[in-house]
Image (cartoon, rainbow, N blue to C red; front, side, top):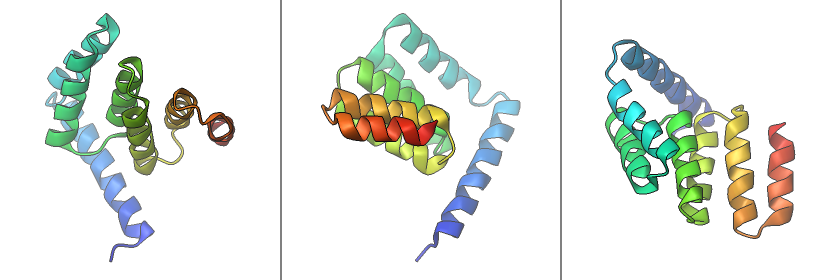
Length: 122
């Protein structure tokens, strides 16, 4: 099986690849469309484009974080929580991931866990 060290190495490699692809401008189109859709309130389109980014380019804390926000805005707290947890799997030190998870937990009525998660991320 894969150890936590192997998983961390894989995430670092994925992050490096994403940075290289961004530099080459390959990711910009999907990401810009996703962000624009989210800002304009077109939740389903935002989710669709963040999903395309994840499917095509692999895991990213930012895409999981933003898709989590989109799910929460769309009223799907459970999917928002799933993506927030995936976001934190990508980067356990990403403060926004804890904020997304805490917001999703709060929306699920899991208030104590939401407070604990928020405090964990500060």
